[in-house]
Length: 463
Ligand SMILES: Cc1cc2nc3c(=O)[nH]c(=O)nc-3n(C[C@H](O)[C@H](O)[C@H](O)COP(=O)(O)OP(=O)(O)OC[C@H]3O[C@@H](n4cnc5c(N)ncnc54)[C@H](O)[C@@H]3O)c2cc1C
Image (cartoon, rainbow, N blue to C red; front, top):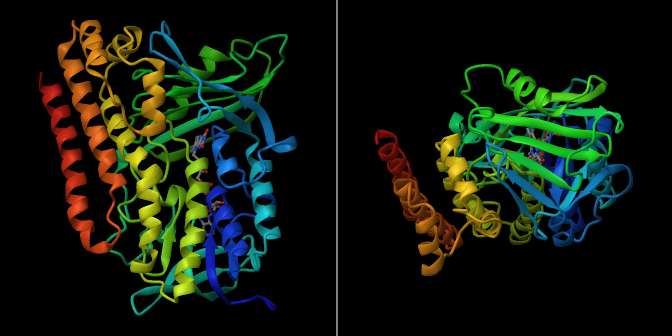
């Protein structure tokens, strides 16, 4: 292909929510940016998703909130159901309020705004194939262009925003970045967007996203029922990657048949996908490369929301790349500030929620019903946990919980141990080392917290 540029400050791979924001802010900072995506331009943004995003990120980045074609509906908060459905906690706070978006239109808007912000070269139907190294530092990419031609692009920094299946994460020569993820750290999902006539079936709680915890119907994950408008819903479920059976069959039996009680419906969209539900990668950068979004496991481990963190990370990555380029230093030492930004902000919350996720996945429906129906955790406490990644309890509320949970002292003790460890890991992440030298010691301390939670689970299983 003629007339294409081959040398850039930054190449962003993937124009999803993370990549579009990274490219936009890197361009705004005056960098020479190339953005590539393997999809055709008019399909960028089209992703199997629950489509829910909180409103906070738009204020934080000072960008337009979803409106018009890209907005499906406004959401006030979340409803969390116990497996028996006898208990429903309504969770309303500014962080939980937001939008259900039309993913394609939302993605197209983010892409157009990135291009308008001054991205120097946007190439669709262009696939990143491999990383190019010079002196142990990523210095560019091998790509396949839309005409099938293979070529090399040079860059000071590559930002990998290519999603969960990132080919680049697997190719990176790094002792800091995990190439392969343990299967238990991800959830397999299936969802459909179903339209029906409002005369035949009403959308339940149209201003709330509903989440149903049920270890039998959605083992290891949850069922979701998200409104889209007065006549359609986005419904689905997530389950362990190792679930022995088809997640689509679970969906049909436990979601579709339960919630679409009419014979007159249209299925607008179907599909499955995988979400990482763990703390971010140990390091989300190395010499000449930064990873953002699903590629770096930057997804809320509790509910699988990854749109907001991918956009945050895109913004942080653009700024750290700019600082590194100003200093003419693309080494991990210069890019470490990106890791620091991630780990001390949402990384701290996600690490604590990762511990909670690991323990929740071992609880039975009985335990979940007991905990929620007896208000062992109140709605406010759940909000505190999900927005701060920790829970500080007074002696009085601890005593009140002991009385409520007296018939299951072991469960209560385990939950209290979990709470203490969540607070501990949250603090550890907030004091993430400012430089690489102290990182190995910090990592050991984090691993030891995980080990203690895993030991607690093994002990509980034996009893
Ligand atoms: C079923 C399901 C439901 C979900 N529900 C929600 C929800 O309700 N709310 C929420 O916040 N999050 C949700 N998520 C998670 C959310 O979709 C992701 O966390 C988010 O989209 C991550 O954005 P990203 O930019 O990192 O990656 P992606 O959006 O996956 O974008 C990656 C881009 O990279 C491109 N690409 C891939 N490989 C290459 C390559 N080699 N070369 C060039 N381009 C490449 C792809 O074409 C794609 O455009 C859900 C996920 C799933 C699977």
